[in-house]
Image (cartoon, rainbow, N blue to C red; front, side, top):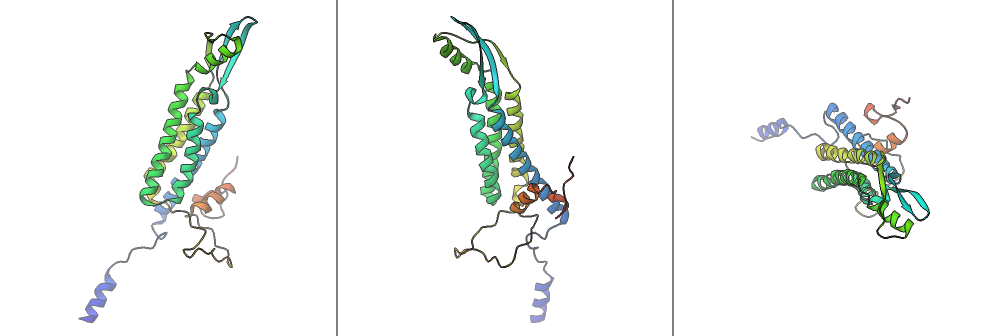
Length: 229
């Protein structure tokens, strides 16, 4: 009876340890993680850049003649900039969380991108900022800017915000399989021993960041440099 119990227990397949799954699945996870990081970071950076550019132009006629007016994205609406910052914070938080917390942060990341895109498109046709400048320029509160034109920057902002949205959707779909960042301290509050340097693991988000910073393609294994133009 005892031997039969031992055989039965031994025949039960044991679950695989974390990180020992199918290589194809692990590779797919690295690709989705790299895509989310690149799309989210690039999208937020472009939103912040484009929001500082001129979005609308117009003119107003006063006592001194016709004056050309312009308004930047920040003058029109501050929502894209604020939501891009939220997106960056969510992009970091999605790597530091697990389970339900990661899904919540992924939703926040996607919503920040969607909100920034919507705000940019709405602001593209908003002439309120130019009307305020017209009133200040002429000293007449009833003055309005005329001949309004929009530059391409609001649409660049909206397109970049969609990259943040895409990063959030990728995190929502594939995030549960991603690893979380390791803590700096052990549970007893003391720093980890540094007697030996930990080898880089492409499954760890922090090592993936380092590989991307060095210009390597983390999906092709360690030490493989990404092709440069």
